[in-house]
Length: 450
Ligand code: NDP
Ligand code: 2IT
Image 1 (cartoon, rainbow, N blue to C red):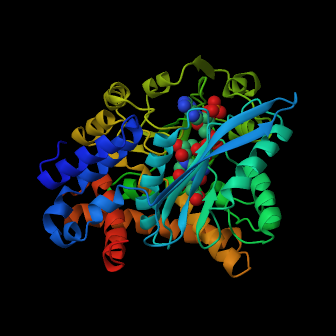
Image 2: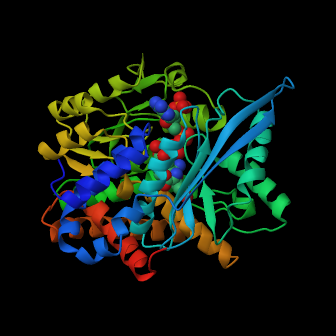
C-alpha cells in the first residue's frame, strides 16, 4: 500500500532521513502513516497542529552504560535504553526487553507501537519502552540480579509511578522485575507502583501473568465471532514458548481449540495430539530449559522437534498466533499459511508480520488481528495493576479477568468501528491504528505545541 498523500510522503521521507539504520522503526512508522492516510485527508486541523510530525518523534530517549560484575569477577558492560515516546494521555508505560538483539531501533519501534496500543486500552497510559542488549540466557541468578540492580541504578532517575512505569517483555519476567523493584525501592526509599508485573506478595496484580495470552484469545474470539467463526474444534499453531505463548495456549485450549505447535529460538515442536501445557510450563517457567525437551517428556508418540524457527508456519492450521518476536512471519511463510487454509492470524508478539506478510493476509481475506490491538491485554492489565497500587487494594483473579475481557471486547469494537467509518471494513489493522491515533491526537492538539 503506497502513500498518495504528499504531506505524509514528505513526513515519511523526513522520518527515514532522521532514523537511518533503524529499519524496524521505519517499518512501524510506515505502516501507521499508510493507514492514517484517510485521517490526514479529513483532519486538516491535526495537520495544522503538527500532530503527525510530533507523534513520530520520541519525547525523550535515554541511553546509558550498565556495568556489572559476572561470577568470575570480570566486569561486563551492557547498554541500557528507555525511550519515552508520548505522554499525551498518561505517564509513559511499556515493557523492558532484555535480549542481545536490542538496539535503539528496536526500542523505538516498540515504544512507537505502544503509544497506539495503550490508547486502545481505554486506560490513561502514554507510550514508552526500554531494555538492554543483556542476554539473561545462561546467566546465574546472581548475575541477573547484579545486572538488574545496575540497570535500575540509572533508570530510577527517569521513572516513577506518575512519570514512567516499565514492565516485562522478552527476557524480563517476574525474577527481573523483582530485582529491579527491590533496587528502585532501596534507592528512592519509596514503595510505589513504579513497575508492573510485580510478584503477588509486593503489589502485583492477579491475572497479569496470564493477561497478554488470555487477552490475545479474547480479542481473537471477538474477531472470529464477528465473522461467523469460533475457536471450537480448530487447529492452532503458536510460535514462542514464553509468557505470551504459554497463556495463549492455555486460553485457546479452554475455548475448545487444539494447539499443535510451539517454538523457541532454536526450533519448534509439533504435537498433532495437542500440546501438554503442564510439561511446557515446567520446562520454560521452572527450569528455564529448551522446548526441544518436550519430546522426551510427553506421552504423545507423534510429537516431533525440528531445528529452526521458520518451518513452524508450514504446519497446517486454521488459526496462527505468532507470539515470539518481530518479523517472524515473512511473505513466503504467509503465502504457505494461506495455501494451507489458515483463515486467521492474530498477533501476540509485537510486529511479528513483515509488510509483505500483512499484504498477503489482506489480499487473501485472512482475518488479521494486529498486535497493537490483539496483544494489548498485557499492558491493559498493567494499567489495572497501577490502579490497584494507587488505591492500595488488590482485586480478585475473577475481577481482573472480567475487566480484561471487557477491555479486549471494547478494543475489538473500536477497531471494527474505526475501520468501517473510514471505509475499510474488516481491516482491523487500519481500525486499530486510526482509533489508537485519534485519542492521542486529540489530546496532543488540546495541549498545544509541546
Ligand atoms: P518471553 O521472553 O517470555 O518469551 C519469548 C519467546 O519467544 C521465547 O520462546 C523465545 O525463545 C522466543 N523468541 C525470542 N526472540 C526470538 C527470536 N529472535 N527468534 C525466535 N524466537 C524468539 O517473552 P514474551 O512471551 O513476554 O514476549 C513474546 C512477544 O510478545 C514479544 O514480541 C513481546 O514484545 C510481546 N508482548 C509481550 C507482552 C508481555 O506482557 N509479556 C505484552 C505484549 C506483547 P528463546 O527462549 O529461545 O529466546
Ligand atoms: O508490549 C507490551 O505491551 C508489553 N510488553 C507489556 C507492557 C506493560 O507495560 O505491561
